[in-house]
Length: 141
Image (tube, rainbow, N blue to C red; front, side):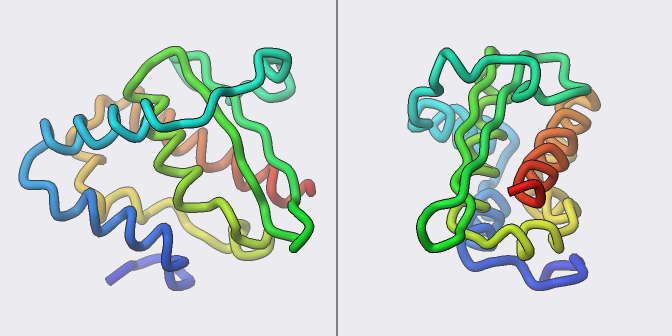
């Protein structure tokens, strides 16, 4: 059960449940690495300051655009595989949602995944910064 102000969208909820079921931090890390490896290639020309996520130790980039149905489509990249996995987690969970729904989400769903306790404080902070950047980009569309 999520403690967020609004219920989690189905895709994000499935991602949360998948990580929640992992029996160890090692398995969660492996899931993040797998997600990172499946992430689409990020356009090199999009690695510009406006797309950089502030407050991350790693180099993290995120872009967003609206598709024809008015739903947000994110792309992202990082120079760290674990951070790239966090980006991929959020992309999978948030892609296809309208900007208003993304704006209403609270980041506390990360606690349900079990990742919070296994991430270093800087990575946990990075996850929050990535999420907030994605929210900001969605609301600007």
